[in-house]
Length: 106
Image: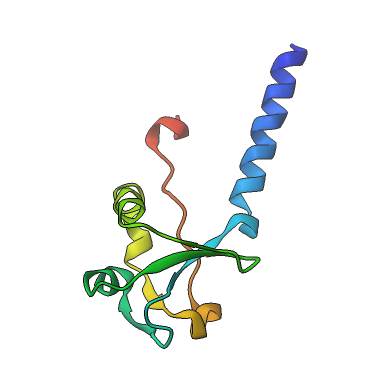
């Protein structure tokens, strides 16, 4: 019983931590610093532009083509957002969360 309660508490803490905005990230174009939402991230990628993930602390991780392809399969909505360059990173929207699967809902 005690073990189940601890596991339940850890599960709830995990969900609260990762559902908050603290872990939110943005897709930022690093090839063209001046874009300001004129085209989607998909169109930018089709033109050969590079993107990076930027977290709330300003840390950046440049995405490889393989990472982009895998992420596109898992969360395609992330690439339908408008693209923003480094100059306008504050205007860039947060990456949308993954949809909740029907198995989780019950």
